[in-house]
Structure formats: C-alpha cells, structure tokens
Amino acid sequence: MSLQKRLFIAVDPDLIITNKISDLITNLKNGFPAEGFRFVSRQNLHLTLLFLGETDVCLIPDISKKLDAVCQKFSEFDLTFKGLGAFPNKRKPRVLWLGVSDPEPVTALANAVIRSAGSTPDSGKSRFSPHLTLARVSDEWRKPSSDVFSGIFSTHGDVSLGTTRVREVILYQSVLQPGGPRYTALSRHSLQKLC
Ligand code: 2AM
View 1 (cartoon, protein in one colour):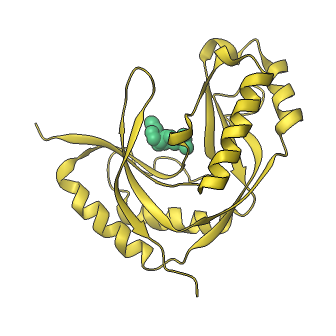
View 2 (cartoon, rainbow, N blue to C red):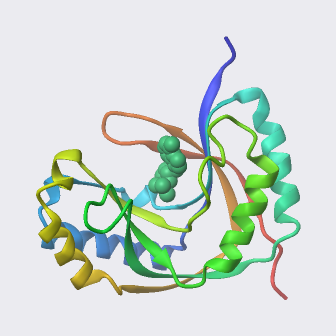
C-alpha cells in the first residue's frame, strides 16, 4: 500500500488579521455558550483554496511544481475579511465562517489551483466559495439554538477585520488528532511581487 498524506492548499491571513480573528473568536467564546462550538485554533486559521484529501506522497513533488507554475501567473493581492456567514445556512449552521468583501482575486487564484492541482478523488468536489472557517457547530446544537445563532449574527454579522496582503499559496498536510487537527506547511509558493 502506498503512503498517503491528507493535504489541502490554502492562503493564510497575516499576523495583524490573525490577531483580530483571534480576538473575534474570544468575543464569540465569551458571549455565547462555547460547548456547542469547536473553534479553530489560532495557529490553524487559514482560507482553503482546495482540499485534496488523502493523497499519495509520490504525487507531492508534482503538486508543488503545479503550484509554482500557477503562482507565476498571479500577482500578490489584497483580501478584506468582512461579515459572518454559515454553511449550510444561518438558521442551523454547521460551519461558522468569516467572509471576504473582495472575492474576485482569491476566486481566480483558487480556480486556477483547482484546474491545475485538483486531480485527486476529493478535490474540487464543490464550487469554491471564499471563507475562513471560525468554528464548527456540534450536531446537538444545530437544532435547539437558533436564537443563539441569530444573536451571533445580529451582534457580529457585519464584522469588519481589515485587509491582508496575500503573498503566497501553501500546501498543507493535515494530521487528525483527538485535540484537533495539526497543520504542517509542506511547501510555500510565492505570488508575483507587485511593483
Ligand atoms: P474549511 O474549514 O475552510 O471549509 C483542512 O481540512 C481544510 O480543508 C478544512 O479547514 C476545510 O476548509 C477544507 N476541507 C474542504 N473539504 C473538506 C473535507 N471533505 N474534509 C475536511 N476538510 C475539508
């Protein structure tokens, strides 16, 4: 059997935005019953471009090469984090996320990454929708707590966290552990510098 790693491709917010997202998560934890949420830990905050899932390790050099090629065609760009949203909907969320107000550049980048590197069984199953996951909601909390969620969206729905410069695309390995996943950067791919 060949060795496999669970992979995904993402961009990271910069330190200032990471701190602001971390503060927002602290506010959410303080203001609302935390036991129904699994918040993303500070070091794991990212915006996924493509989830590859379990991937043969022998494919990793080829994926990295493809990411280099994609990143040669895209310049660094700004990404503004704004607004809370939820999958599948705000009434009974399974995932609570932070949206972006300028989705075009990151969507173009993600679509290019999907076209180039998205050939594993799990990749590119759903349409790219730019979001940064803040928390996952436990099943038992989805049904009885719609007033909690409406409280969250009325208080923080329009939250505006500022702009990060996206400078690189990162190939991550995810190792699932009882205390939450551990993400390790396997390779980093710089976008073209702005003049
Ligand atoms: P998301 O939280 O932005 O939706 C690493 O597992 C990342 O890959 C997750 O943070 C998740 O991004 C994304 N992902 C997409 N589809 C996935 C799936 N089927 N299983 C696990 N992660 C998935």
